[in-house]
Amino acid sequence: MKKLDYDDVINRIGFFRNRANLSARELSFRLDKGELYVTRIESKQVELRVSTLLQILDVLGITAQDFFYLGGEYNEEDKHLLDVYSSLSSDNKKFAMEFLKKLKCN
Image 1 (cartoon, rainbow, N blue to C red):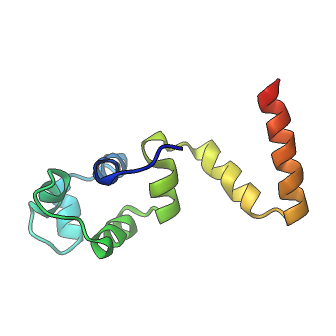
Image 2: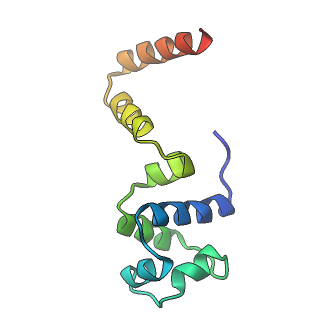
């Protein structure tokens, strides 16, 4: 997985905002900010704060895990696989990893 930088975070905001069919203006209003607030974040005129990012994620209805892990490559099947994997016991996680490694080698 590629290391994220600030530009990636800003790009992911735009990706998920568009995916939610929200304009920058509408998202700004939902954050109780001025109409250009999100535009200014996305154009890097304003430094994004962690608290603001968390508010944006809440408005967009996504988790921080989805935002940071899946980002622009968001895929429901990957998310489902991660959800299933996280619910496995420790022994079953080891078994699943070995199985996946064998699949990858074939």
